[in-house]
Image (cartoon, rainbow, N blue to C red; front, side, top):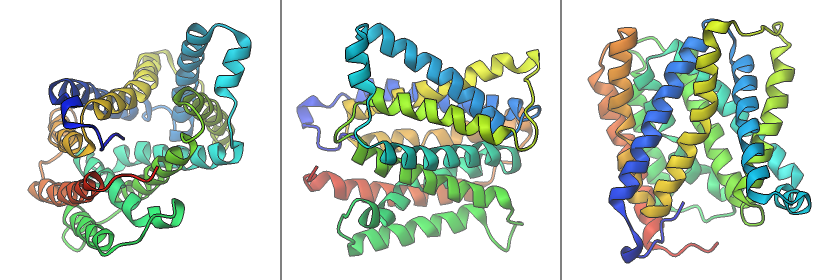
Length: 301
């Protein structure tokens, strides 16, 4: 993220365009993921998603670098163990996200996913050695209040989808923190290369557990959508963060909640739950408080 952009360097209009692309990509990935999981399990889905992504990344690396020696230097990891740990967390989080879209309303899953920055605030002192402050405690408690409002325990039955939503947010939070450590020494191409390569292997191995199923022709198009949007969503989000501070981009990303809620109503006859928006707003406010604190203090890295 780029929270310390100079005011003169910010371009909120262009950042909003990139965030529109990110929202479209994330929404398309959710729709495609539901269609695919009528035929394949989440491990098989992750295998094909990662394989498509790996093919794209390799193509970009070959085109951009061209010289074999330069290419090998670009993708050589400084810490293979750190890359492996990061990819395990991301793989777990993404699997849980794809599982969650099948068992709870899309709006609830996205609202729970928005707790990711709050988990970063809670876990960063352990993973990155950052100082644990009273503000972090307050942000975390506010975020958990939002979770309770979204999940409504005691009012509606909780199921494994709600747990998957919270656990996927933790997996994504660990991914963000470990990526921050990795990118002190390695490039984004290196990160993407080893992410897609390792997760292709993870998906292939775990897909054998229930018996690997070759995808029917009817879902090949959906697999292509998941593979492309898995990269385009994060590229668009990163581009938005390069043009505006995180505190400006985060409220834009919140638009993903009403968009995905309307998609759920339109395609899957899901009910519009007002408390999901209330809880999502509380979570967004907690994220804003956390990001605002980040913006007024220079980063040490």
